[in-house]
Length: 76
Image (cartoon, rainbow, N blue to C red; front, side, top):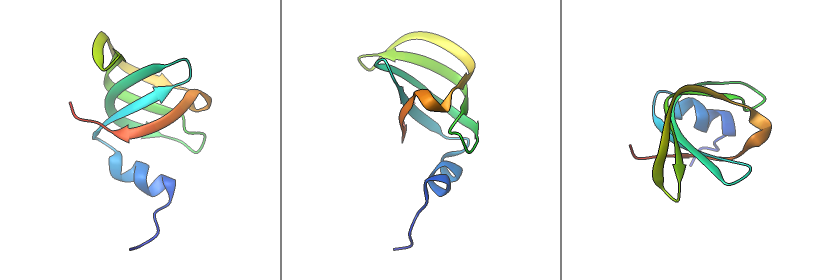
């Protein structure tokens, strides 16, 4: 199996749904539009989740990289 680097995984996730957990127990789900070397990410059609349930729709958001705990593939 080929070694995967973190940016390879993020590149493969572009234009797909991801779940992002942020510091403070906040979770955001949306389509990964872009990211940079600081792990700042832009999500389209973003939604804030609480206990896995939709809390509110956010639209397009920029999430600052130093608040990201993890990014994972997500179902819509």
